[in-house]
Amino acid sequence: MRTAGSRSPTRVDQQVGEKIRELRIAQNFTLSELGQELGISHQQLQKYETGTNRLSAGMLSSVARALRVPISELFQTSDAASSETRDPVSESRARCHALIDRTSSVAKLDTMAKVLRALSAD
Image (cartoon, rainbow, N blue to C red; front, side):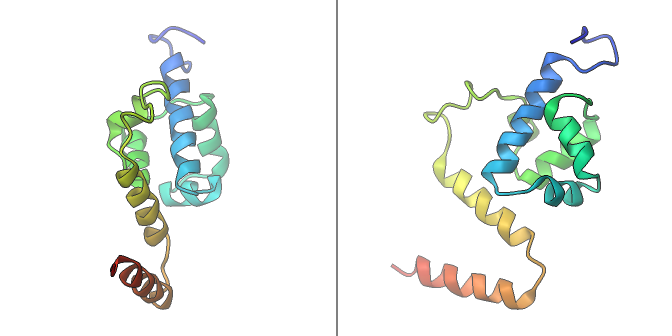
């Protein structure tokens, strides 16, 4: 890897890519699904995740929005996000939101709402 002054990806670019991959998998997004959400090919997303290509500030913002996380979370290494600092409720909520956001069928959304309503009635 080159220094931060060159146009080549740096260690930080690689760490951000790894974090994106980790979050994508945790939210059950495929490369194709997240790529489509971002308006890029799955190949381009894979290059971001592996640190082969650098992400622009605009793309960082788009990725954070699609994954429903603050941009700062993309810069956290896995060590920094230990299970002690993670909020399991927020993580589960984000996974649910990701599934709902990817659903375009009104019938499926209505069914999801009924299931959630039934589960929440304790």
